[in-house]
Image (cartoon, rainbow, N blue to C red; front, side, top):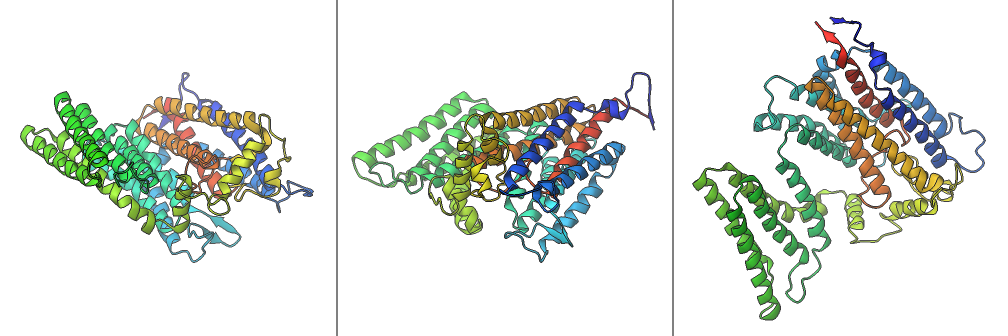
Amino acid sequence: MVQQTDRQQSVLRSLDWWTIGIYLALLAFGWLSVCGASYTYGDADILSLDTRSGMQIVWIGTSICLGFVLLMLDDRFYDTFAYIIYGFLLLLLFVTIFNPHEIKGSRSWLVLGPLRVQPAEFAKFATALAVAKLMSTYGFNMHRWKDFAAACAVVVLPMLFIVLQKETGSALVYISFFLMFYREGMTGSVLFTGVAMIVYFVVGIRYEESLLLDTGTSIGKFAVLLLVHIFTSAMVYTYCKDKKQSLIILSYTVGTTLLAFLFAEFVIPFDIVWVQLAVSAFLVGYLLYNALSTRIRHYFFIMLFAVGSIAFFYSADYVLNNILEPHQRTRINVLLGLDEDLAGAGYNVHQSEIAIGSGGLKGKGFLNGTQTKLKFVPEQDTDFIFCTVGEEEGFLGSAGVLLLFLALILRLIKMAERQPFKFGRVYGYCVLSIFLFHVFINVGMVLGLTPVIGIPLPFFSYGGSSLWGFTILLFIFLRIDAGRNLVRE
């Protein structure tokens, strides 16, 4: 049971009211942005339920009521029923795969009469609860591969179901859980490997068709293989603590590549990549030999990193051209500068940049934006709503919104770190990671800095499913945090 003493606070007094205040402020600014994005010259009533701004008030009102209900539940409810909630959402995601209703090429929506629900938005909090429950069980150790694989499976399973719904953007959000894994003890090499893969993909694809001087060598392939050698040498130094072996690897790989380049440039032109691949083969063999002779398993894992890096790079082109949807492939090409296509895939971002730029320092004022009022920006009240903030409120308003999100992130970090139990801390960092990913990617794609993957801006983008999903995600954590001072018997 839960007892109250003179030193204990009631649930309402224990709530983090700063976070709730930030939440309400984001809802208010979000509604103003939806008004600006959906308003058409001549509209008489922005509060009418026939308008998006009117309907957004309904979603905001129901979200606040939903948040209040979540605060009234015992915080142990979320721990006790975490797996049941997760299983139910998985079933809902699986059923949605066979949904006959396709909206904008995606089967991620369940249509229930006049109501449309997107289960993927609710699966985030369910996955966060399940992975927090798993990682807080007695004996769980992130450094044990069996436990780490189980945690990854909890995250990857809903991700696969969402991909099968043709909703790749929402699926990519689950990558953010690896930030929480890192906080909870996941080796930094896993995070570094993920960053390295992104670098390989961007550099390799972006410069694949460019040639290195007169050698006939692809700059993309040359640069990626050189990076693999350098990264491998750095990992030997970092994880094996062997400076001598690191220098040997670096000098032989880079030295051989340099000699091959000089020969190809000044003697006989040829593709240096073949020499680099041969060097890579010897490197893999050398790492395997060290692993067997020294019995230091880090050498074996570094060898797997080198092999995996090369395999990933050579499969990247296949993934881009044969697995990704045509519109996704075009968006990546536009982002990497391979295609301009201002009238096609690059149109959204180009118009969004014009809208934000036209806002200047102080903006054009509420409902006075021209790009948004004339509907030049597609999806300007959902995925691209930040461009409305930039046009109407200018740089100062945009900075203010980003500072609000920064304040939310900092409060979530503080709340997560003060949790007395691992369940609350893990769930808190899941919430933090999801919000951070959404804000970074959404604002980045509006500014043309990240790929357009179609994910909403928390509390700003129009729609009930995303607003309810983010509210549930946040208020469950608020309730867990509010119970931290209660003595349980």
